[in-house]
Amino acid sequence: MPQQTMMAANPTTAPEQLRWTEKLMFLATIGLVAALFLSIGWQVLAPDDPLGTVSIWTHRGSFLMVIQAAALVLVAAVIATITIGSRLPDVGAFAAAAGLSLVALQGANASHLLITYGQGDRGAERQLAALLAIESLVWFIVLAAALVVSGMVTKWCFQNNQEEPNSHNARENQHTELSDLSVSDTPFLGRSLFAGTNEKQDDSIKGVKVTLLISVTSIAIFSILVSGFHPKAVSHGQSWFAVFAAFFLSTWISSRFFQVRTAFWRILSIPVVCTLGYLWAMMPGDIAGPYSHLPSIPPSGFLHVMPLTLVPVAFLGTLSAHWTYAHPSIPTRQKKREPAGNRRRRR
Image 1: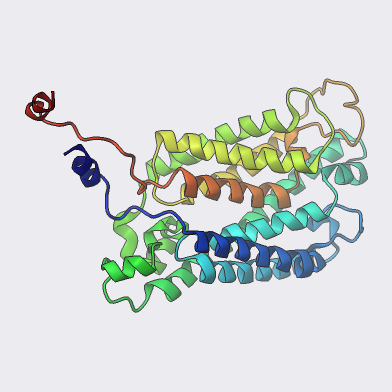
Image 2 (image 1 turned 90 degrees about the vertical axis):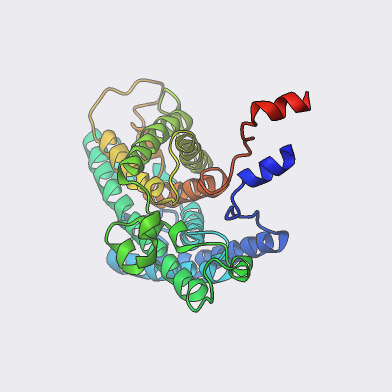
C-alpha cells in the first residue's frame, strides 16, 4: 500500500533523467560549439593587441564584431537545439554561452585593461566601469536572441505536426514543452510566438521576487568569492569560478523559496547584477589593503571580471541550476497522509 501511495503522488509528466546516449550527445554538441568558437569565434573576437583582453572596447571594429559574434551565437544555438533541444530547454543559449566564455579565456584577464586604460587613475577606472556596464548589456542582448532562436527552433522541429500533444508516443520522443522555454514567459513576445502556453505562464509578482532574490544573493556570493574582504590581483580561473558559483548557488537558493516553471525570471537577474555591480564599481571610496595602489589591483570585485566572462558564465550557472534543482515539474517524493484506520491496521 505505501508503494502504491507514493506512485500515485508522482505526476506522470515529470521529466526523465537524460540517458547516457543523450549525455554523450550533449557533450559532443558542447565540444562542437567550443571548436567553432575557439576557431572562427577567436578570429572574430580577438582584440587588436594579441596579448589584450577580449572586449568590444579593445577591438577597432566593435559594431561589426558584435554583429559577427551574434551570428555565430545564433548558429551555435540552432545546432545545440536541433541535437539535444528536445530534452533540455534553452540548451541553445547554454551552448552559445559556453562558447563565448571559452573565447574570453583565450585573452588576457581584466588586469590588462586596468593597466592600459585605467593606469591607476581612479577617475579613469570609474569610466571603465561604465563602459563595461554597457558592454555587459550588449552581450546579454546577444544571448537573449539565442534564447528566442532556440525557442523558435524547438517549436518548428519538435512541436509542429504532432498527432496528440499529450499522447504516449509524443512524450516518448519529445520531453521539452513550449511552456518550459524561457521565451514563453517573455511579455508580449511569448504570447505572440507561443500562443498556446499562456495558461502556464509564471506569475509576474513571484517572478520579480525570484529575480530580486537571485540578484542580491549572487552579488553577495560573488563579492566574497572573487576578492574576499580586501582587493587582490585578478585571476581568470577565480573570476570564472566565482561567477558560476554565485549564480548557481543563488538559483538553487531561490528554488527553495519560489518555484517558477521556466528560467526566464532567473536569467533576468543577470543584467540586473551586471548593471548594479559595475555601477557600484563607479562609486568613489577609499581602498584598503596591501598593494591596493597598483593599477593592476581593481578597486571593486566586479572589475575582476570582464563582461564577456560575467554574462556567459552567469548563463551557464543559472541554466545548470535550473535544470538540476529548480524545475518545478520534478516531483518531490512525499508520502500522502494515510487515514488513521490504515495506520492502526499496519501496527
